[in-house]
Length: 136
Image (cartoon, rainbow, N blue to C red; front, side, top):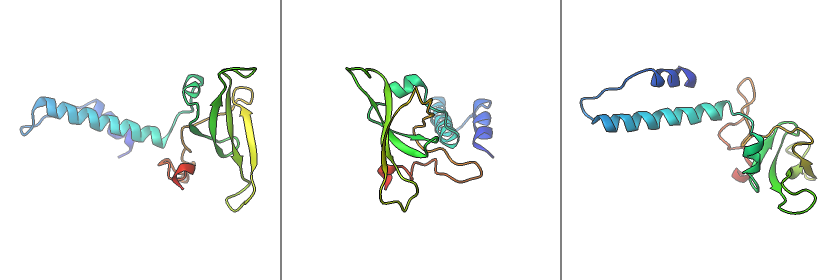
């Protein structure tokens, strides 16, 4: 059963128990449904919206256009005030010992950003975040 099918069953069924109170069953049901929704989001994440990007100052994100993680920066004063930029180091491959620094205007370059690297089509990738730079 897929995560989407499991969510559908949860959303369209009634759980009853002789061993637990209705409140306990409801609490478990709601927690389980939320966990399945979070799993579905990890399996197929949506790109960050401009409003979400504005809230992620100093946080890491994945950018598929440049195949790299970066940190969002947003100046509070100056010519670039409130303009989100993606900053980081790009490496040609994993064995590369020397990278190139980048600082891209997210809106001008129309970059797509995710809170973590989405799984690749066909089963690759890592939606768990294990390949995130902070995880080694």
